[in-house]
Length: 386
Image 1 (cartoon, one colour):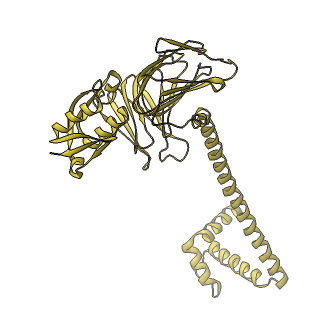
Image 2 (image 1 turned 180 degrees about the vertical axis):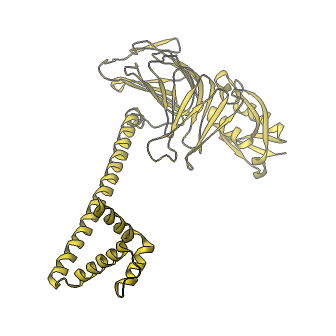
Image 3 (image 1 turned 45 degrees about the vertical axis):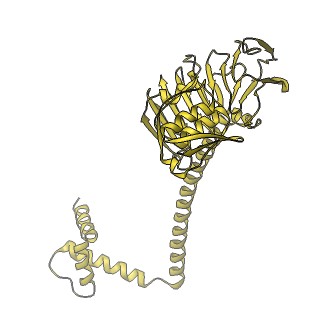
């Protein structure tokens, strides 16, 4: 017990920085003081120094090699740990990316098959390369529950083969100047605006109901909690259970917007998240605008009628810039519109426009409000300052 006590005290001296400094100073000279433990600590330190000096060259080389091997082994272990962690992280990223890409690749890839014409009739692409042209400006397409029977404008019935083992995809392409209302097989109603394309299954076989939109459409989704409804666009995906909302996703627009009238939806988009897509929830009475170039989503409260009134045959504007109004009118009527005075781009307009009127009649009303006039010149309507 006594020797163990002495040993502990000597160890305390050799491990204390301040006391060890005293020991180093006393190694070359005589030991100061009468402290037996201190004297023992000095002798031990001196012995360690002497044993180091007495090492043979080969012993020193062997000791150096062992130290170097220990260092290299430590470095290898640290590299393997870091590499393994990085590899696992990259593997996680890759698997997540592949899963997410595969999750949305099916109907989106199919949607690239049909280009969006700017003129002509509304066209319905069915199974077996069957195509139906619809000449009416305001067409109505109703699907049966099985998706094999389609009624067009309450006057024409079309049959298509539907294989319940594989998904049968249909496409409606609406050129500029025309509109279409579609009732899908689940009784969801879709109003397609001018210059739009909707890709959808003839019958929803999977757990999720998915459609792809290019252009603008208003959705009134049949409620089904077990089968969420997804509207996929090139930039933003909208997930709902049952609600009313409008989506505008034209390729030549810098923003993709979603306006929620009632219910709730979740938006998925390419943001600045490292893994997967960013997600946001929307509340009724709000509009979410996604900036494609900045990959940023912005939400704000809006008067929803301003963005959904086209479904009922009129357009409502509140201090809307004139160029934005002319773009909507141009798409709706498929007409070319030109502003002859560059200062007109700064004008705004508020009011309601009845879409039962012609494009020229509507533009005449707008022009009068901003102290301008509309003139028909060849194949375009020109707005000039009075």
